[in-house]
Image (tube, rainbow, N blue to C red):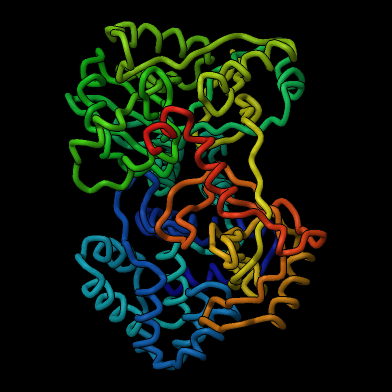
Length: 550
């Protein structure tokens, strides 16, 4: 582990991509295959392979407690260390200097420790093990162990560069490395195959989810005409929960965009199990009532339930809208054009008995479009039916897991915006660790201000630097990492929608907020109100839900 950490330091010290890949390749070649596989995984910043369901559940609070116990540093010293580096790993390297036993950890021991952290029950047991490890290892090893634990390696080494390093180290085509990594969901497995000349043996396996194909954004129907001059497929875009469905050996499992298992929708298992053969599908789970989709802000109540609740599936029934087929009865078909995959998908779902109402498993709704007016018509029709917009797809497009390209484009309804005031600020992470870049914001509720969200994207580095200087001079209360500031900076924020929330005193939270622009022209007295937030929330629920709540 010490040599791994030293290599990471050298990688972080250079900005040249070729130099980074050479350092990784040389280090991997110096190890036996199993240690090289462990190191390749750690170089991606992951504790476990993409497909694995292991989660350490060790957050910043536990790491902070362990560092405090081993370093005996004061709260002020720890805060100063964190601000200097912008992550807990960097702070650990400094805080633990001279405080550990300096016994090195092997890569296998590091991996086993991560697995044990995932297996241990409760924060007390996890804290005990983490403290033992930090007390034992060298400060440099502690730095990178924590970086792997938090998933924030921050040495300028993305997974694509690790794939390039494998290609260089084992003299294999990069495309074959990428494909093996994609199919197995494990960079370590791809390394083993590359090192032994068996990349062609890489297989997609049931119940090992792969990355989802992603879409790029389009601003107008005119953009779609430019992207697809010969015409394309307009598919309704559903505002639900993206899911990858694996069925085989009598079992059905659903996985989310983060490749975690979805266990909240048991009512979908029986209809999926009734479909013939084994398969991997891509689709969207949506709430469906009286032939129309339920707003996501309402449907998300189905998420995060540890135990099934009988009333929720009845009150908020789920439907699976299927739009792609990746694998069928042992055959990988994601390389086939979309038209071929769609034909097989339609044949598969023809076995579903389409009853009246809302069938549990449905095919996505399609139309074709070529002109600007046809794309606009498809877009407006989707909005009328209560959907987010449309997905525009090239008929010859392959399914490319984990990639965002121009084969698929998404056209969504314009985002709403609110004018709000910043009421609290925090230091950022990584390269923004020295500036106040995370902003909590509020709206007016009579004579008081109530929070509705937090944003940290959308402003330029210059704007953030200038705001940092301003906020530092207008702090009302120091809360550690967080500062309550004078409510004087007005910003315009965009968001996807609004949801109920007990986390904010307003009772609402903006979903995916981002800063559109600063509004120095607008006084705080003219920012939006809680009443306006409530209006937007009720409008997005649709007339049916409003009637229920009234």
